[in-house]
Length: 378
Image (cartoon, rainbow, N blue to C red; front, side, top):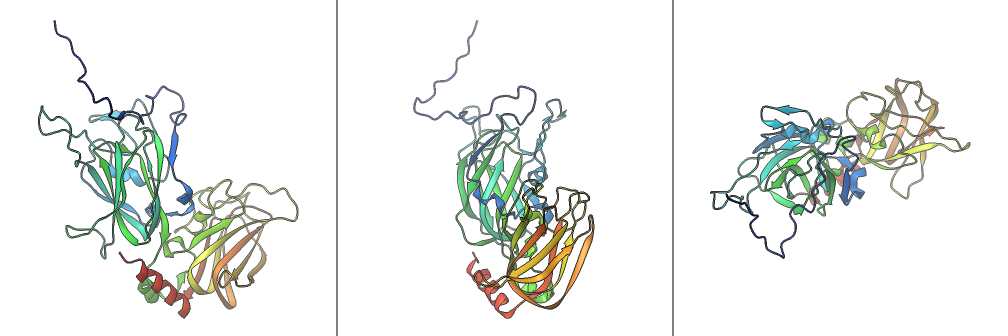
């Protein structure tokens, strides 16, 4: 008769399972979902968003679950009965279990890790990441790190210089792990590393888009407020149903919540509003306001105003104008509208799916963008 015993562990070693989540016990799989770390940066655009052109272009291992799941917009789903010929099917990126060199050394070395390379849809300055381990309760990575690169072409190669933005950081299972980044350089690609292995459901890379000024110069007329061109949402009166940042995302709205919708306003004499910063000082020539899929809850009227610089006076670009539901509205402007910021007012409330501000950078705007671009070179 034989007996098995657990090998003795160092008494001062931290518990490697301290951040595990409890096994799934049935019911709502998100009932015990957790959040850890910093999240103040999440109002910034996700630079890796597939709607901006982001993609997972390489990974060293994706045995259990595909790397592409990292950038899916919807939250991860969990089906306890979903198994395939390789094992449990998870909604995320999951690698196989790493092993050591021999039976005497069964654990991987401290340097061993798995990685996935993400092309940012919009190159820019990274302010923080969210590493979501939803449903990875005992099979999440012990730590993750993030490296970044600035690549002229479409993909990094063997000569690419990778810079560590996030050192190996403890992860929690079945949780949103928020990590702030303190770096002012412009990046085109990131590499997420799992130490030593495991699964991550979603990755978000929040920051500020910094476009190439030479591309602007070639195009001439651009959408000055588009997120992919460096526009950003500064503030809004209400974010109840959806983020106002969606108003400046690429493409057309696909459904009702793919835009900005506020709650019903009940105080007379007030209205909802959202303020945006342009890529740089520009001359606006035409405006598009789209209420696609907003049929019974579109804004009743809108007005658009602008200002040139934070100390500038607000001026009218579009007077208070009636909107139609589920309609693309186009407004050619009769005069010059030079601005660095705009404010869209809705009366009294309601949704807007997309807004486009077509125009070109002024000489001052071009100089400002080029100065910021050069200062952010790695």
